[in-house]
Image (cartoon, rainbow, N blue to C red):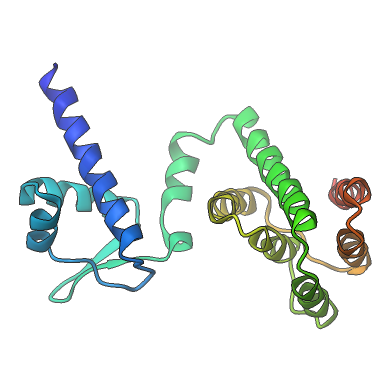
Length: 207
């Protein structure tokens, strides 16, 4: 095996082990990671390999090192992955359109999931936030919807797509809550076809 390929494989395995450890320990934003020595002993790899893995995570903005304090997990929405994608991947016009379409597909899937496992109290809370003017942007509304799907990975992907899409075009303000309330009503009525129709109408309003 090519030496560079072998080193890359080991390096990626280290990054994945650190990621798995973060998940298993239930670490969240602001929590401190074990020291390089502790990670080396726990993962049974050399400290230089651990250091490289941590450097990669830090370059992505997923962790931060504070002098004299240690290494800490950063907020997922506060890292630089969007900027990296924007610079190296998402410059093609077709890919930009794909981001928009994928974001909308996730929102529709979230509506399907909510209807299949309806939580009326949570829907009423979204309605209340709309009526009280707490949801200023359309993305604020759909953040509530996608989060209510209770699919963590889906929500994470949507957040990433939302961040990039908002950099391109901004996020539309909610000036009239009526279409959003109608969408919530069809969800409560468990009418999936009508819910998706209201969703499409809502999106067509911004074109």
